[in-house]
Image 1 (cartoon, rainbow, N blue to C red):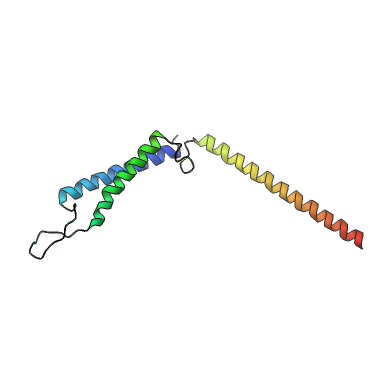
Image 2: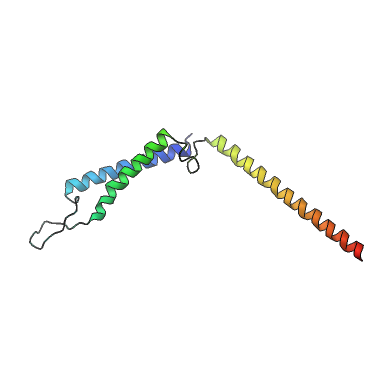
Length: 124
């Protein structure tokens, strides 16, 4: 069974490699590096510097994928490296703790209400 860290690593590496392929196509088609066209050239396509974001994001996604692969504890809060059983146990423990806290607060309210009613009855 896949852990969230494994799935995130695959998604980041796949996206980064896909963007790297797109970058190669952009270079081969002449859309990178950016160029401005004059009216004299008919086969020129004007591009701007926003095209550099594609190779930049490609490198960022590949680096993130390798970081999650080599050191999954870096992003442990976002992508836990736990299998389904451990995640289920952690969730059940947190649910139990929350239920215990709720029961403590409700018993506190009950005891406070009881004290107020006793005081009110004694005053009358």
